[in-house]
Image (cartoon, rainbow, N blue to C red; front, side):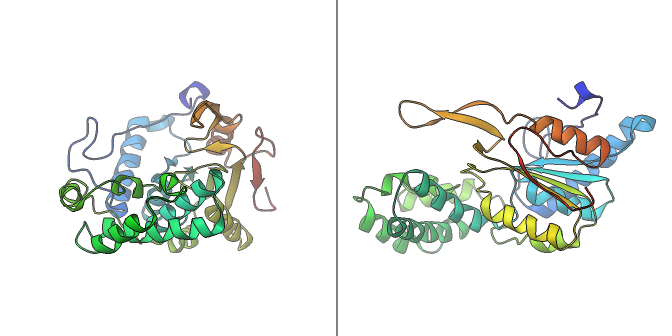
Length: 284
């Protein structure tokens, strides 16, 4: 989409995936260092054609791109459906939002989050701590109507596993994930203009708390812009529900790609991009 508008894009596979070597990791520091190297390579390949240069990071990129921008100067950062909360907070928000969409009560949501916290501790410790407590809560609540709707971002993977399966999975998913990385210090320290584009119905990366935090940074004078698309989910797609109540993506949120292109090219955006609700510094 970007090259079609005269904007160069340097796309690379994360280490340990696709055509890239190395070992897969979710360590944000390592991934930020990789992004800096990729930026320098893009600048070298682009040569005299390069004007403004920066990062566009989706999802996990919301944690990685701001770190990279703080390590080597760039002109902009775009975060698409990313987060300004911790990985653990993300899972908690995902569970709560799913419960809301399924029409469950506040008390049921409280119970679901109790299960989630136990599962998150088990996942974080690689299965070494908390299995008994997690299993006890599963047995306690498994017959309640809301239980089948407890999902989360990684909790769902643990829900059906017994102890032996948890132990086996722990070895497979040791990705050095920084579960408690707090992104706000990096965002406060940044001097790079940033555009954050979020979807109001994102179950994978729930946007409400992140949107509030980005608005607070804008109020504090940071050169950030926030755009929230109502009815959009992870990937900035709109959706319909099929006969089973499952989401089926229909199209990208109108205006999403144009907004990013304008920010990349001009360093600012207009005031209307589809249905996006936009918050930006007064000078914009």
